[in-house]
Image (cartoon, rainbow, N blue to C red):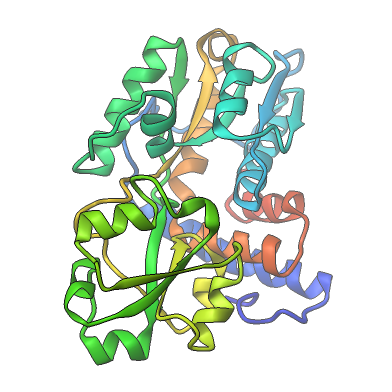
Length: 322
């Protein structure tokens, strides 16, 4: 992919490279199966004549690059279909943005299925699969008069990463493998020490009394592990740094971190006023958002400092959605 590993490209070169790379990633995404949802059996011409006088729609996003990009993808694609779209970025946390959805301040936003279970439903039982997580999240949506469309192939969740040489030395493939290697140091951010999925939850679930803790601010863990200051680090599976670091993400074999695919949430009343091409576009887009694709776009925005709006526009254009 042209953009990967080229932090000093000028803006024009980077945009051109990303466009070429995301074309291939889109094709990969289209071939992958995504989770259940309100999916049309026929795909309409999403780049055909635009209809006028359509219902205005307000799209929201949270306060980080991946959500900004996804919000831009939704907003730009719907504008291309002729909808008047107001995009509100940095709306807030899951609780805040979901309150905005249910109260009518926004109509549509991207959410993570696992977040819906834990934050909205108070679910503490681990699901066995991404599909089971989707199905349970769907019950929340139906109970709250919200339409939940197709889930992305990619998911963004916590994970534990180690250097490749450390993994090779101790024959590490899963988080359970960490139990028998002797004392080692793990880092996470200060707010993620307690809780079921934090440091304490990992220790309890995997019986890792040999795992020592070092807290670091978000973003500093990659530097620390590459310098050998720590042995294992808390990462997110869509972090673009994983594309450049010689790290191995260990399999969460006890499913501690659950499943976190992204779904569009739209209030039923807003959805009822949209034409079929809106859901067809969103379903098609969602199917293209593979792990490779979202990591490439995250890297373009968070590391190469491209505007999320430009990144989204290139992806939509290269995949025939503009």
